Amino acid sequence: MPENPYRGLPSHHFWRQSVAAIPPFAIDPLVRFPFELAQDHKVAAAGSCFAQHISQALQRHGFNYFMTEPPPAGMSREAAQADNYGVYSARYGNIYTARQLRQLIERAFGEFSPDLPEWRDRSGHFVDPFRPQIQPSGFASTDAMRSAREAHLGQVRRLVEELDVLVFTLGLTEGWVHIADGAVIPLAPGVAGGTFDESVYKFVNFSTAEIVQDLCASIDLIRKVNPNARFIFTVSPVPLIATYRDQHVLVSNTYSKASLRVAAEEISLARPGVAYFPSYEIITSPATSRNYYLDDLRSVSLLGVDHVMRVFFAHCVAGSKKTAASPPALPSELREEIRNVGQIVCDEEAIVKL
Image (cartoon, rainbow, N blue to C red):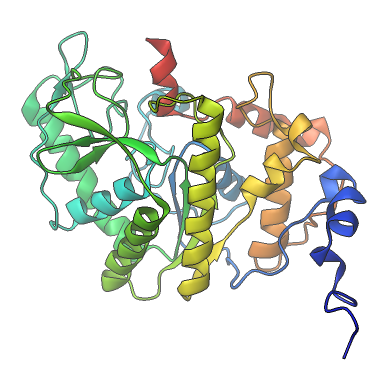
């Protein structure tokens, strides 16, 4: 028996050997991953804005990125981007909280029918409160909005029934709820439509236990119709753009990310076919964070995205020849990524544009 239980453990157990003594671009915090993605797997993505980096990388590398709501035939790339086609696997926009994900699946399968009415924007057009920025010009009528919603939910059903792997990026614990029916919305009323009324809407800050409960419910709902579905959870390294709690945004951000990270850990340990991928750790590590955020200390830099994706392909993709410890990619190899990173859609930014 060793005199010290830590003696002889592999180097990844120790900060000095696996973080402090490693070149920042070569840090690889993923020791093992429970399954691999094959190129023919239908991989769907959802969550906060950081999830778009993974979906874009999968598409660029020829993987079967599963979309049930692609752009209409003949629509230009610019027009598709403006109307939020191809941003995620279905046209649901940013899904910031675990409760949003759960309720989206419940609505798609008729298990939750909220009474939340449509909103109006500043131009008088109709807005879907569950995806308030999905149609930048709004809808001409209530019927048009509801018809588009029903078509969308049908494609969400198809997505759930056919996907092989869902990559979901957890973004926030803070959110807004329609008091009458408990429906969670991605943006506060008044930000991108609707009018705030404290008798109609309330602020919530989900606990770790509630997040775990909602993620478990989402997994169970999906596996009810798709028993072989697998899941990859990540935590977005993008900080809160604002907090509604009466405290410093830095403190709120720390709570939010800590709660989401703990929930992802508990789920990945408790459920088979569920994995956690450490994009959050790669970006926020003391060794890398000074280079992996832009001047706003919120947007992730190209070097950071490249590092995350090198680790992802090294561990999570079958037959990948990429190595997580390779040097940063040359600028010529990042031209397409540079163009795509500038097109990340983040509904939360509407909060500070008012």
